[in-house]
Image: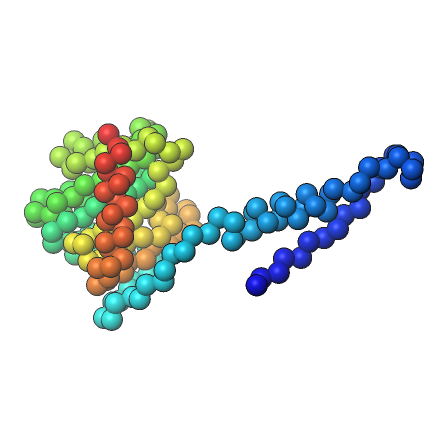
Length: 198
């Protein structure tokens, strides 16, 4: 059983010794530590094996390798490409998605509602080019950034699909190849977002 250190903090008081109230600070801290401990909110999520034969590509920004990883994933798509995004201002990524659609890939995007209305957002550009887009306004922000490619591969990471993420931010992009079990989990979440969005 894991033990938590619970410090005792003596409360200063102006009462005389005969009228002093019982000390409850230590008990309050103990209860607080219990309710904010990882175990208070944990769920049993079973670990899963990564399939044999899975490979990955990893890129970082600034420096351009994050963008290269994302574009490689898009350009490899043959059947389906489902995107969840927060901000979207990267023209190379937008153009790669449009090119994928033109070669017969089913492309669809779930975007954060507020971010999609910002001045430099390219979500309207995707819509103008016939890519199905839904905007999610259910949360403070729809902050997920990932792509599910051909129900087999997944691109994910901190990397927003923006010029800023390429040139100015410290970001990462991870592309997992041949991971259908992981792709299925991401696709399930993507469909949930799609169904709740407009």
